[in-house]
Amino acid sequence: MSNIEQIIEERAADIGNFLVGRLLPFRQKRAVGPFVFLDHMGPTHLSNYQNLDVGPHPHIGLSTLTYLFEGSIMHRDSLGSEIEIKPGAVNWMTAGKGIVHSERTPEYLRSSEKMLHGFQIWVALPKELEKMEPSFVHIEEDEIPHWTENGLSFKLIAGEAFGRKSGVPTYSPLYFIEIKNTKPQKVNIGKDLFGESAMYILEGSIKSEDTIFEPKQILVAKESTLCEFEMGENTSVYIFGGEAFSEERFIYWNFVATDKAMIEEAKERWIQQTFPKIPEETGFVPLPVPPKF
Image (cartoon, rainbow, N blue to C red; front, side, top):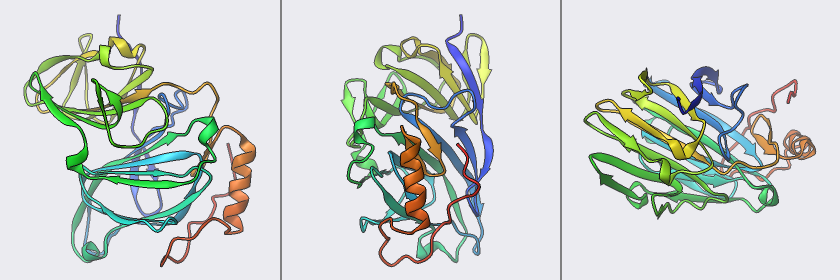
């Protein structure tokens, strides 16, 4: 019997002046463990006059995880953080009661051709931490746990698994794992997983129960501890999940909360521009209308 409960295909979504492949939330699957949002950006070639420019916008009730394969993004936020995100590094921004940030092509790349490719991920906070103070952490690539085993290359980008722990300060039991190979082989890591679990195929192919799956798909497991599959040659997959929350999460725009009243309050704060400001940034992304849950 197959351990695949659901297959989710990428859907195109517009985030302003940039198209992404949206994977979560999905109508029949709103979250995997605490992961409530997953966008696959690119790979996109930007010409010498095209740039990523996502202006100041707010978040509440979540942590964002940005992970790039190619390209570069300049992150600025209302805590005063200003750092360039490069491939392999992790940007982990916890919104809590409210934070504002912008994401732009760095100044030195704005007049040249460039690539952009990576993940934008949201992880919901536990109910008791939804209104915590915001924070920001940047983890360089060489600080992320990585190892090889049985011909496989692993990275523990966030969370805990395989008896290891990432330096990313998560707030609930979860994992976000990269696995790469060069030669076809079977993989059995179910004993190291827990909670809800899903796999995103970035490149290559996966064979499970005599069915071959290719990139731009999420495979959601029925039971994480039964995670077993065969990787084709030169394949890269990302396995993510963890303990699901007992409370429903509501999402409107960039706001995540267990109570719709918190989202209504955040909307009004953004309309009135009472969220904290980003130093040296002007303008802002308007609240989308009409509001719908």
